[in-house]
Every structure is written in structure tokens, then in C-alpha cells.
Amino acid sequence: MLTCDICGASFKEPSDLHTHCHIHTGDKPFRCEFCGKGFAAIGTLVTHRRIHMGEKPFVCEMCGKTFSVSSSLVQHRHTHTRERRFTCNTCNKAFARSGHLVNHRRIHNGDKPFICSICNKGFAESGPLLKHHQIHTRDRPYKCDVCGKGFGYSSSLVAHKRSHTGEKPFSCHICCKACSLSGHLITHLRTHSSDKTLVCEIFSKRFTELRLLVKHLCFHSGEKAFPCHVCGKSFSDSRQLFIHRVFTQVKSRTDVISAIRNFQGEIILFHTNGCTQG
Image (cartoon, rainbow, N blue to C red):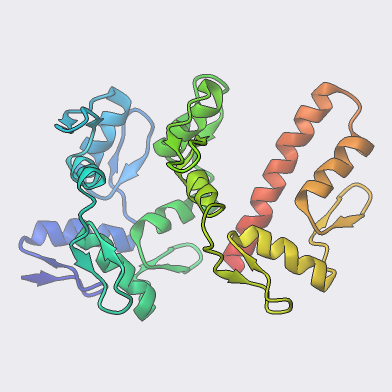
């Protein structure tokens, strides 16, 4: 067996080890002729091309849902069986796939073998590293055919298109509320449970979402992290800043739309900078 000196992954063939090393070096010699996106392995490029071609040859025999990648089908099947055979020996959290368990264990041991070649920030998984790279490159190869907005991932584009179609495929099994994103459903489900793991150390008040805790802490500290770049006035809540701008600085519907777009970009940059500095 051949072993990667960086992360310890094992391979039978030298060619497989060589391809794997591209993950750590950031080398992506295989380019998509449709969008120009680069890949470390030719097999990954072949799979990626199916996104552009619309090919989904792998079909779930239980519900008929189709996939462009066989591994996605295998992962999808677990939604029917709910089987989670791989358990973490530290916290007992269970996973449907062994690879997910391997990635999860790095949370406990602090291992971050995937390093950004630009800023040297480390990640426990290759996926977050690829997403992080877009902070530096601003690459948005996937374009919405309705409004022209670009995205770094095809999955982000799929989720965005629901804002045009109104599709809400994720439903709450308790109250039947429908959501366009699975993350929104997860957040909504907490309103039905007592799962409030985020605690204010001053008043011991509990919250289901980090953004709510951060907003609450601003009231204790008096911090106003959202300044208006026109008049200099600061606000503790991003929504208060936006309302301030709309009522004091815009004069037409076109100006409102422009203000919304500019404001969203600044908030994204604000959170991005906060994450990269942490």
C-alpha cells in the first residue's frame, strides 16, 4: 500500500496516489471545456461534465430520483433506510458513510490537512477548502438563466433557482411548513424543540441560532458593528442599517433595488472577513 505523507490516505496504485496529491498541492490540470473549471482528477472532470450535459444515469429504485454520480445515489439510499453504521468512538455520533466519519473525527483531534495555498488557512475537509478558495478567486462559473447571477457551485445555482420558481421541497413533518432550503428547515425544526445549545453567559438566555446570539450580545456590549458608510451612524443590527439607508438615502424604486444589492454584498463581505480572521 502507498500512503500519502500529508494526510495518511492509502492507495494501491501509484497513479491514484499521484492524483490524490493534487488535493494538497491545489494543482488542477484537467479543465472543463464548458465552464473552464479545473479538477485534480480526470474522473472528477468526467462526472462534472454531466452537470452541463444534464446526464443523470444513476436511478434510485425506491423513488425514481436520478443522479449524475453513483456515490450520490448510494448516499441518497440512506434517506430511505436511515441506516448509520459508522459511529464515532468519542461522541457516539453515527454516520451513513465511513468517509463522513473520517472527516468528523478531525473535529475531535483538530487535524486540518487541507491548506489554502494563498492564505495558509487549514481545513478538516477538502470541500470547505474548495469553497474557501472562491473568497480569493471570486470564481462564479454557474450562471442563472433567469437573472444572470453567478455561483461558485452548481448546487448553489439549483437552490437559487427556487427563488424564481417558488419551489419549496423541504417540509416540516410537524406543522407542514415548506422551505426552499434544507438549512432553513433545520433552523425551523428547532422552533418545535427545546434544542437551544447557544447560551448567553451574562443572562443565561438560550438561542437556537448563532446569529440570534450574536445580535443579543451586541445589546449587552453596546457594540454597533454595522456602520453607514454615507453618514457614519452605526447600528447593532444589519436590518436596522438597511432600513436606515432606505428611508434616508434612496429616492426611487431603482435606487432601492441598487441599495439592496450593494447592502447584501457588504454583509457577505463583512461575514467573510469575520470568518477568515477567526
